[in-house]
Length: 320
Image 1 (cartoon, helix red, strand yellow):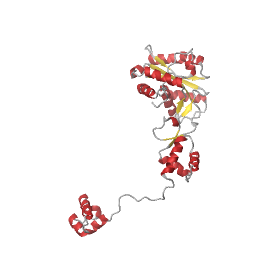
Image 2 (tube, one colour):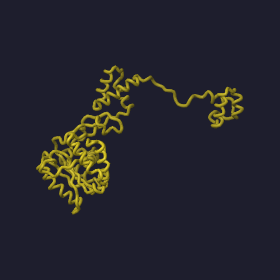
Image 3 (cartoon, one colour):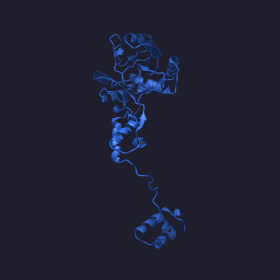
Image 4 (cartoon, one colour):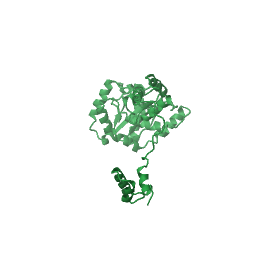
């Protein structure tokens, strides 16, 4: 006769069935072909899994729903501020408990994405332009040169306030940080196409129409020669005021494709610690040179999906 642990599945099933029928352990042991002690141990075994231990949670489901509402209404507040508001609602909990409940709800503290400020007129222009290009193929987009400026700072640690959000909420409007193009700073101009990236231009002054025309003449056209040679191309720019001036080229409605590329560059530079502007420029140039044509090609291939997203969002900024 074997021990309880040695019982087969058939024996265990037989024991359970006969026990429910009210049979004695002696009869069950005979029918199952095991010892009576094995039957007894099996019948009186502890249920699988450990019993819940520890003290009872100090907050109710209603309290937790209140906390979740507070976080969603104020996603840019820190834990201390959220805890203060939660306790003001009549909940008795420590700051540590507040943080733990937020984590239980899958909230994480993240650097917010930046939402460009566009007015209704710009929304409509984006929407009209997207509808006009909705049937373009990736092959047609491969003939386009995208250009834009981006700000680079010596200190990459100053990212501003963080936001509490859940997975998949990076582009949720309440989790975005508004930004005006562009704050006063030294800007870097760049261009890309499916063939790769062009030369960079470090701007020393505020971008106005005259400065921008100089960029087009001395950097955009050489970039086009480098990327396309004698082949035809289409120049794509964004809606920054200098680009929309009458003395500039015809304004197109940007889908911020090259901003994805700037994001790649900044992520590669996240651990860089330049000591001055010249070291920063050298780091940007070196990192920009690491961008491969394959990376650019993947971004270009995403244009049909981006166009569809803009149309669905009726011209408003959205996640592509």
